[in-house]
Image (cartoon, rainbow, N blue to C red; front, top):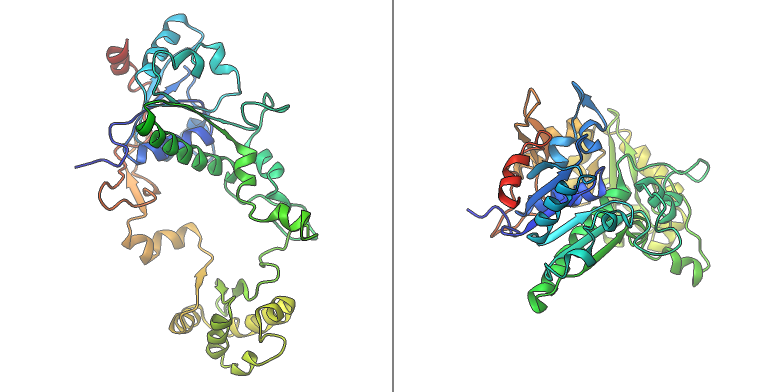
Amino acid sequence: MSRGPLEGVTVVELGGFIAGPFAGQLLGDYGARVIKIEPPVGDPMRTWGVLQDGRSLWWPAIARNKESVVLDLKSDADRALARSICLQADIVLENFAPGRMQGWGLDYASLAPDNPGLIMVHVSGFGQDGPRASDRGFGSVAEAMGGLRALMGFSDRPPVRAGISLGDSTAALFAVSGAMAALNERHRTGKGQEVDVALYESVFALTESLVADWEVGGISKRRAGSTLPGVAPSNVYSTKDGVEVLIAANSDSLFGRLAEAMGRPELIEDPRFATHQARGAHAIELDALIEAWTSSQLSETLEATIDAHEIPRGRIFTPADIVADEQYQARGMVTRIDAPGYPQPMPMPGVVPRFTATPGTIRSAGPLLGAHTDAVRAEFG
């Protein structure tokens, strides 16, 4: 049985924290062999976030499907072994500061003559060139400079964080898509190339028409809380039993169905709400009407009514909601897997996306430090 569409592809992962390792996780999910080269102290992610007996609860997921090989790249012998591994790889994925790989003799220019099909994916805060290329840039900095933080939160309060490492994870997704595009190009030409992923650019790429709205339309988008400015109704509403439900009825047909569900069909012809533009202009009044209705309903009754009228909705899920939800369960999206060093199976998200012919797999959880060093030395040494 195939372990995924990237079966047969070898990836060498160098670096730590989130952006590069998450990209490595995804490539491993899709079937690639991922050899993770770690320093003797290990990837900082091993002790990052919530811990159990000193071990990160995130590590089993972000390092799944990887082989841990401990090499001291200050050592000539270990650098030589790292070079040998890279020369037999399809993809080298690294997220060090620009210039670090060159210092070790592991940069693209040093490797490509002996491995012309090599694809080297760089993930860094500001890219491989430009005046800030050598600056440290974490995901939070990327979210700020990429234009995202200015849009997150409420207008009368400072910008907020999304609650996850969005800048890093976004860069990881672009790293994977860039690697896949380069692999496709290699199929045509036989030649590899470098893929340069900057965290701040990855965030900026998500900002839709932000700059055009300002430069051409004269509109500088600002923080708008939980609403979608000019588009209504699309907000979070509370129920009688304290559940928060997001309702998105922001088209004429959807709003008509929502008005019927509310028992307020007259709202369809109300000049304040009769058109998309009018609803956007009177969003505060409309939200108040909807909130008055939802707050009088128990959540299950409300959701059944909304579903009967075919209106998009979703609860604001907590982890407990995710684990209990029948849709998550039906698609096996919460996966539990035995992880070395942990006393119980570790829950983690399943493989995304699904492939019908060659489904991705979770073959192993994050390994113990250096668990594969001897085997890899024997293979590549």
